[in-house]
Each structure stands twice: as C-alpha cells, then as structure tokens.
Length: 161
Image (cartoon, rainbow, N blue to C red; front, side):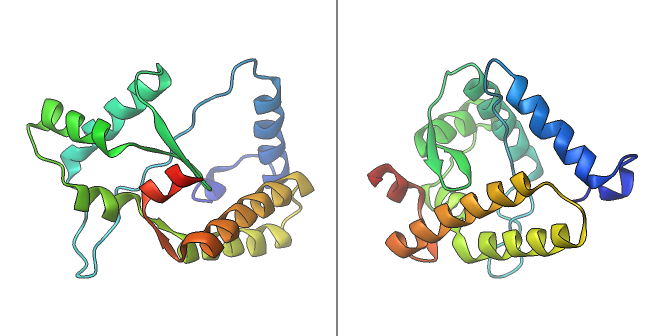
C-alpha cells in the first residue's frame, strides 16, 4: 500500500499485472517480507541496523536452497539454528532463542487486523475478486492457526502441523 502514491496506472491494473505475471512463471518466485521495525513492550527496536546483513544472507541462502524454512500461515520463516549460525558468521554476535521468538512469533490478531484494513481499502477501489480470495485464504489460515495455538504462536508450533 505504500506504493499507491507512485502508481501510474489504476490499482486494479497494477495488481492484475502482478497476478498474471506470477501465473506465467515456470518456477515459483521466493518472496520475502521482513520487518526491521519491530519493537518490544518498551518501544525499543528488536533489531539493530546491521542485522539486515543476516536477513539478506538468509534470503540468498534460501533462494539457493541452502537453508530450510518453516511454513506459517503468512509464508515462510527461518529456522533458529540457521540464524544463530549466520549471526555468528556475519556479525560475530550471539543470537538468542528469546530474540528469535520475539522476532518470529506470529502475532495473529495483528495480521488479521492488517488484512481487514487492506480489504476495506480495496473495497473502495475497483480490485479483482482474486485479490480478495487470496486475502480470504490467508485469513482462514490465520484463524485456523489461532484456533489451534492461540493469538501469539511461536515458530516451533508450526513444526507440529
């Protein structure tokens, strides 16, 4: 949604182009969403700026199938063991299991709220029904996980599914 001010075509056409492009690909593209701006209960960032080096290295390794990932309702996240190694190799820094939990805990209610905001916004625009279907499917996956594990789900819970 941060791109909206920069679109030179309608939102409907913009999304249509991306959906059609994805359908024509022979190999599935690995897309990564990262959040450098997570804060703790005191308002402190959970990451340092230099941590980006680790996320980028993990992404590169993932693209080349050198690391595994945990499937969650919103995509894929790293295994703790891989990040622990990368933090040591790249930054000579210890990466705690507690930090991993804070950064990769699935916050179900926040994700559901984000989907609702996006859907309400898209309802005002002329957007393909396929977009709403994708959002609906993600919402259903989140609700199913919430029903099974609660509002805050630690990564290792998804290994049980």
